[in-house]
Image 1 (cartoon, rainbow, N blue to C red):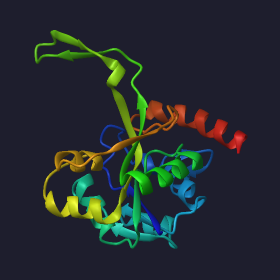
Image 2: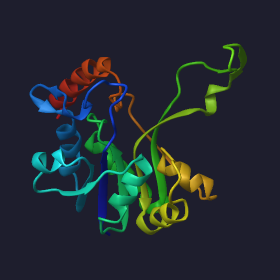
Image 3: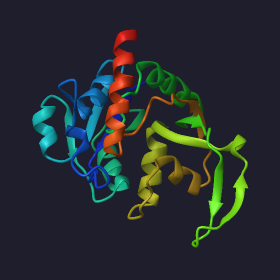
Length: 214
């Protein structure tokens, strides 16, 4: 069995204000932490989907141009990789651990489609357009989606072919829309996605703790 990984790195970082993937934590870019996490596991092939600048940072890793949407970027990656199972991961999640990657690899062989997730701890409210609370949602069945998400390659490639041109922000959502079953893999609350500048400070703490434990 051959495992591949697609790292999405083509976002605009509009909420961050500048390219968050190039922000440095202890002298190293965020995207380097992310990619190195996969280089340190038994992944047969890695493809990075993003801007041309990434070629200079990772000259020895396969690169493909990012698309106008995340869905398009992943599809470009799928067309550039050769594997039986593929893990798809956000470039802005640098705290991903080797342990979770290995758990995902085991689970996807059995389940065909899986996503790293954590149970929601906050109370969730449904609110209307005027800011009025409509109801409190039972959080016992609610989970926060993380990455990596992983799939049998032919299954997710076919889903992308069938739903081409749409704007799914979540690959599991594509399979759900087509009626396929998707399963959970227990995630880690430290596996944050850097979205705002304040997230960098949190990532610094988590990466320091990760390095001390490794």
